Image (cartoon, helix red, strand yellow):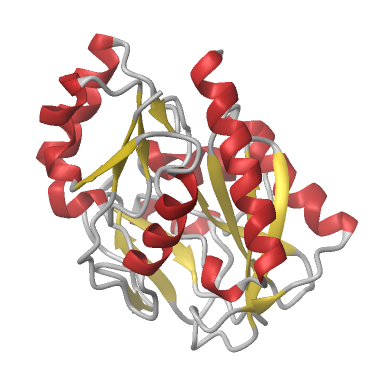
Length: 268
């Protein structure tokens, strides 16, 4: 069952080395699957070359190759190509609309609007975070006391003085590990985090909402001043995993879970 593994080994991520993570993963996965690596802009052309599935990993923000990604996605859906994660994700894979939908549905997320005229629906704070609705990786993020702009163009959220950010990592619906950034100013200086039952119930609520049958997901949250967790992002397209921060046994457990998930996905 040959796999086409999509990655951008040269993507200059801040505080992370995408290439190292994908070298680790592919070196382990090739024990179980024949595989080839390609850049995201080459994926559509290579899919017909006899691959049973495409696994999208550290391919960088889609914003940088939007036309190629949209074309690949359309071609994969039309041809019934197996893509891991499946293209039915409702989180970042589909854009940022989910933050608005989850806010409206009453989920524990950072309250989000996309129209400055609705500012009264948000908590009154000295400053608001404003970022393009189609952005990624904090591209275009600004802070202002008076958000402006056309309706639907930007996401607007209250700027929260949170204690820390924490990420929960899942394969399919199975929790794998959690990492957190004790210093809010150093997002990618992560340490192991012991998730409580309440933390896991919080994270699982978004995994269940997303309804992906297979795949890798990362639930990013912040600890609000009042103590509760609030969703920051639901990464379901190509979440970076920070595997280099895990001890060997935890890395092994993750790779085993991923391998089993891929086998299940390919034979479903």
